[in-house]
Amino acid sequence: MIGNRYGRLVVLVQAPNRYGNFYWRCKCDCGNTVEISGGNLRGGYSRSCGCLHRELLAARNWRHGLSNSKEYRIWHHAKRRCLDPRVKSFPNYGGRGISMCESWRRSFEAFYRDMGPCPPGKSLDRIDVNGNYEPGNCRWATALEQANNARSNIHLIIAGRFMTLAQAARLHGINYSTLHSRVRHGQSPEEALRAILEVRQCRAAI
Image (tube, rainbow, N blue to C red; front, side, top):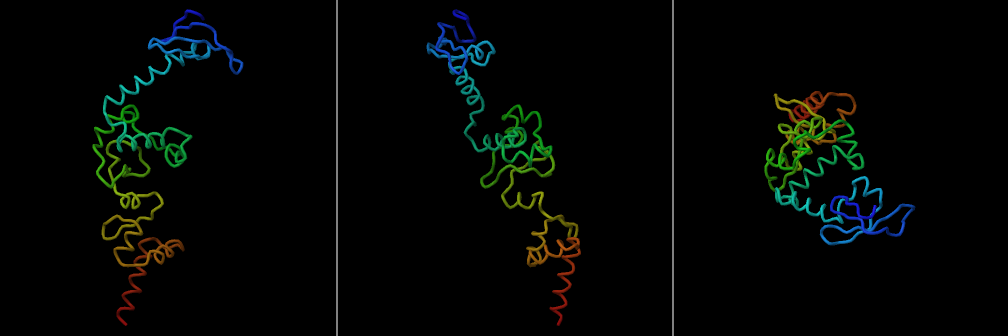
């Protein structure tokens, strides 16, 4: 091992063993010395004292200059929800087949080019909640717009207008709990709304 080069590292001498593994003291091309296990050196997992990683990260940050931006954080978290089983929300995204298109997975720049800056008070929303993160299915939306678009919402059509049960209740000045209770007990959303409105009309006529 002594004298061998692994990326930017040149092995100087053997270092004290750790955890049952052989370690080697290496000198990096940047001038730093570091002790690394032989397995990491031979496997290509360690190619510098850490300076290479920092340089690559700096180069990536410099490329678009938005690594600390709101848009970058939104993209990063959406990507993890789809791809990383360790993320708490993964079962509701990647776990049920929601993915991110290849161009967005590979490039934040592509995501930013397609979505543009995030307007104040808005965040990333999928128009089809069962669809993927991809151009044409994503928008910047307010919290209320996202709540109205949630999977758990009950939807209905009134006079050709598609809306949630909560929106219908607000539109007609109806108590949401009353409307939701009728739906929970077997009426369709349209039937429940029509029945409540008819009762209200009858009371107004008395």
